[in-house]
Length: 344
Length: 225
Image (cartoon, rainbow over the protein chains, first blue to last red):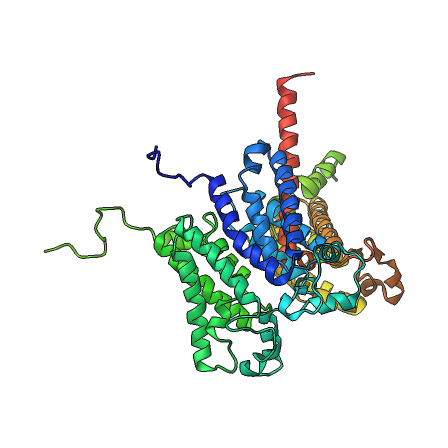
């Protein structure tokens, strides 16, 4: 029993509630910068996740109430919803969430047993299966003339009758997409960066969203719900890899700050890579896990088939966790290093 | 000659109890690679069945003349020769389909199911039994292939029997069933992960069915009617 003045933040429900709370600045920034469409996506994902969780708990013979109220399904739903394009059709959101909860979470044994981060599995399934629909990103309001209202966004998401011109006016390529397309057309980075979608460091609007996720992540660290190793190593991995490439050929590779100030990176570093179930558990292992995920993100962004690589990088590192944990076991206190020769 | 019960038990073994795809988990490479639609799955399944029937018959026929030490190379030579025949025949008569199945036809030679039946069954049994066993095992494989192909094709592109024109010519194009019109397509099901996921679900379903049957049998023993 801790002393009564020590606030205990260790139960699953409490941790999950704090993660959700830490996502709120990001969600607020999202609504402010990109319009209220994300609220529809978040609600739909939440409802789907809870329904799928309840159905799977029943099928597996678990009591529904304690597991449904531990909020873990809602965290998965929100992380997935925040990764999806904000005007993605409803069936895309439902398919991704169902895959995350049913296959990636429950078929692997439920909370605490899953090898892969459920939200990232849902995202990977969608980006591999529906590459076209996964490009319906609402552009930043700063750059759109007629922003969609909440009702209009809902109508787009639920396949209502929206004139194509209206939709084309509000959706646009993300900064990472724009960079990738420009590079494929043999433009140099400097030529690409004059487009209005690019802001100070990252994309217009996108960089502030990234900052809001960073703020939420900082709160989680300050409360010691996540440790510093994974986010720092992840960001360092991104910065070092992108910086290395940029140093050698600034015309062909984006600047490290640009890569760092993408919302996906901040969301990945503080909320997804830090998942206690699918991430490394030892202190040194967390550093390796984060560095590897950051390195792979840049490699996939630069040479892979998709504009962003955070999801695949984290899934690939999830796969390495048993190996990393095995070789980074800390010494038991008081035990000497075995490799050193005994004193003569 | 063989009795009806022998015949039935061989078929039960091949199709259900010792099913190569769901129970023995043999020959998974072609199973996963070629099951992206029903027609591919059915063609490769039938080609494999044909090779198995012929090779098991041949192996069983010469089982008493082959020295034990060199039996495996002899079996492999027989299988390879038969696969070459199938390969050339498919190239000649169903050329478009041959192009789609590609390397997986010659690779029937290395499919462990074929050699496994030759070694485990045909080398120890009479020719008739061996052929029936091979056909049953081959059909068991074909069954799993077709079910897997149907699941993946339906989920992946909303059709059944697409590519049937490869086997029966242009006229057969109209036979393709558009089960889900206006379907967006679900690329994952066609891609390799879809094969692993669908096979996993099939194996789980089969295990669940077996476990339930065993449980029922146990209850039936405990509580005689």
